[in-house]
Amino acid sequence: MSAPLGTVSYWEPWWIQVIKGIVVFAIGLQLVPVVLLVERKLIGRFQNRYGPNRVGPYGLFQPVADIGKLLFKEQFRPRTSVALLFTLAPMISICTAVAAFAIIPFGNTQDIFGTKVGLYGIDVGIGPLYLFAFGSIAFYGLMLGGWASGSKYSFLGAMRAAAQLISYEVSQALALVGVVITAGSLSLTQIVNAQRGMWYVVPQLVGFLVFMAASFAETNRAPFDLAEADAELVGGYNTEYGGARFASFFFAEYLNVVVVSGIAATVFLGGWLLPFGIHPPGWVDPFVVLGKMALFVSLFIWIRATLPRLRYDQLMAFGWKVLLPLATLNALVTAIVVVAVH
Image 1 (cartoon, rainbow, N blue to C red):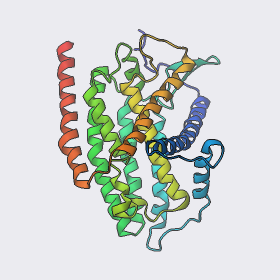
Image 2: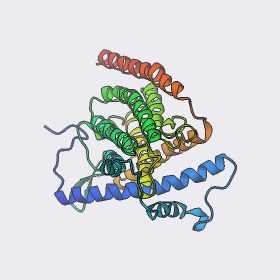
Image 3: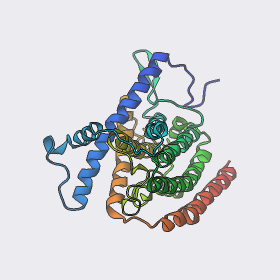
């Protein structure tokens, strides 16, 4: 009996897995500076001013200059801090973000020089669960960063970040339940293959809207950037960080924006699938996914330039009183419809 469509029914050689691990990390490192540059350019246009235009042609080397400035700054920490945990916190944020990025499928299985290679870092049968598991671990990076700094301002920022992440992660996870029920699988590649007739953004529009709203809060992006509200908390959990450690937190934040964009493109916009029955060659698939991810990244930037920051009580009320009931109702209605149809 043949395996279901999208099921991994082959073994990749160990050296393929090593190469894929390196490629995943390298692509993540390259995408973050690009997102930084695009954000500064787009916000400049939204605010009727120039973005970076001095460093390199058209300001293209500005992200390199910013990263270089932070990397070569002197490392320091408060005397009251806990050295090991203070250093470990940004490392946790980086590692969890890269691990989550590895699950995004950029295409189906392709034959490369006679070897079957899946165009993804890893395809596990518990895709969304894997994603939220590492998202939960990332929460410890923020908590440790704030607590280990030995500063009350940092600790207060870490507590607010923890409350925000826990609150919106529930709604974000429930928003994907409808997709999982409809596809009948937790594998992201199988979820993409199940969208050949119709992208899930149509039948799961409510889940899509809830997922995107919760994702803004999960990635600490405006108007939900209360974890780093500099007007109130002097920077939040990363107040006492500088240099490369400070850059690591923001690298993880921007990589998480890319990850969320990739997940949204995968589960709601058909991943590497094109509309109108267009079937391009396999090597086009990664560019299709990158294009859809670029749309979501642009949306993140657009919202940041448009909406003002919420108050903290408004943020928590929106998560628990609006998004959570909507996500729960969407999951229940989807389950009833699927059972009734089948």
